[in-house]
Length: 376
Ligand code: 9MR
Image 1 (cartoon, rainbow, N blue to C red):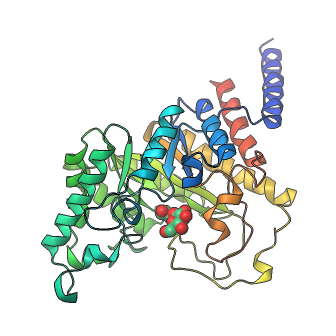
Image 2: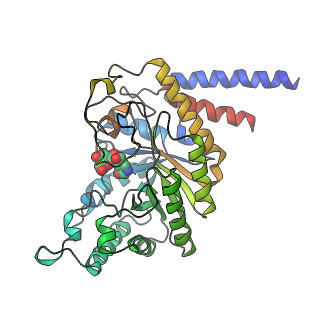
Image 3: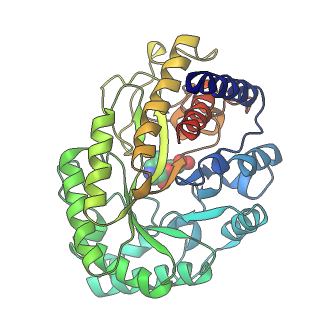
């Protein structure tokens, strides 16, 4: 009797899954709402609603969004003390209209930061005091403007090397190793209600992971951090789900939540095998490394779906420690991976294709959650 009931439930589930596959109307955010937020990074054409089609699709699927570029320092304070909030304000309007939370990205980074930040008088580098003053002014300027509107902020982005030491950035050179703590202090004071995040790529890599976890633990003791952001720019076969899971556990043990902030899965070959999201690590174009210009073959598409599913199984297993999972882009056509690490390729790393149609990897996430729901 029990078995028959289960069979009937399973049949009902596969009908729902089929239905979901034929329509983009399933709302991914809603489906996972008891587990974690489902976010998406959006470019300015979408958040200003010039790209209406994408703006509507994103609003129908996600309950969290990250500005892909328009809240970075070069966009928000291009000249000292002259803030530009236009594009960010458009984004807030779009998010509020659609009841989408905002993940702010990013306050302090070595990249996309104007040169003036580090310049002193007469062509000399700025002093520690001057750089700290500018840091404070920037964090306050941006966070207070968006107070109560931005749910979480990437306060410091990509400050670690792969070996767990600190990147030799202008921040570290001029301010010293405590630039991270200072940034978090300024951020906590500027908007005490915002969740504060340390964000990095390759956050699964054990040596880097341990460096980040140590920092997180120290900052947590001082009440300055809420989450580690694992960017999750993954390849189709790397890293293993074990490495991902170990990192989630490590950060949870450090006492912070995990936010998966920039997930995508690169399906194209990397000629030098490097796994990085460091934008300086570019490679030469070679025809053989751009094999899917006419679309993704079914077998690779299936592999991609399995990969998303395997990784989401880990996220679901640890959902009590996970706050959000964000994909880095809405569709394959707007992904940064068409230009990195090789310019001009056709990549397929996201949940929607170039025609904005949901892919098998999207369907796999719907099915995974529906099946889990039935087991509960
Ligand atoms: O997706 C972003 C792309 O549009 C920009 O050109 C690039 C420039 O730095 O930044 C990309 O986003 C990065 C994010 O801000 C930080 N982590 C790595 C992301 C991919 O490079």
